Length: 404
Image (cartoon, rainbow, N blue to C red; front, side, top):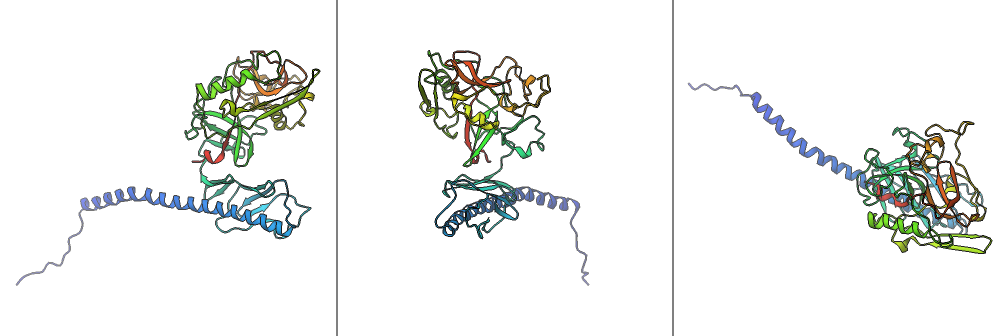
């Protein structure tokens, strides 16, 4: 009689290992793709939410005007966004703001960031909204979400990133290559040597406006150069502008994505009469410009003055009675970092032999004078024909171009 063997044969150890290896390979291939799909979904939600918040801000303007007989504030309305929503922070005592203290929108609520409405409701900006772990921005045209990676460090994160020094008035430290905004830059691959005008550089953002950062380099991109060699300063810094053009469009070609500088006009009166010059940076093809005396006053919290009344100012130092500061003790050290002997005046970084830098502004009290910035203060007493001062560029960049 035939015998039936009911015993089932199991997998061998080799077969089990083979199955495990196959499953591991499948996982290695599938998991990154799944994560990418999930990440893209999160990114899409973040972008949709940003667009939805902008739409709600547009509806807010309409509702506001309906409740206020067509009126809307000329100034800027700011909404602080948290997990509780986007709440109005601006006082509006002269308007009916019933049911107008927050933006109504659907979707994931940002954990941080702001919405601003300005220009009588015409300009609506989303600034650094944190949604689903992404930084989201709307510059008035498009919603963009991404990650600053290590190229932008916001002021509130200085301590977390281990950034030491004095940075009063700095909104963010930005690491970028002005010739290629897409280049990966961070604190570890920058070069702040005098004369460096391409490659990864360190910038101090001191203005955040309409989805754009305005920032100044931490070092001079030229060696000393004459402000102008003309017999007077009535036509502005001719040689400086030519040198700036050479440095940023010839020696190094700076990225066309940088926002073109707006013209700067200086007006003043001296013993001879009234004078005025306008710097049209676009005529030189520049994507960079000089900082102005008026901007410096605004940064350090001093009243803006007519160029006729400008007096020598000294950066606040909090120094000892001896006048000597320790490194990083001056509140505005970042404005004169990498200048000669600046550590005696509280800067963060000293660069021997490299003096201060020119501004775009004349010094009306002296026919030969032009405003400069240097370690022990700033004023306009430097002779415009002096060869002792350099060029430190200011650029403006869309924050969306800094996202990855």
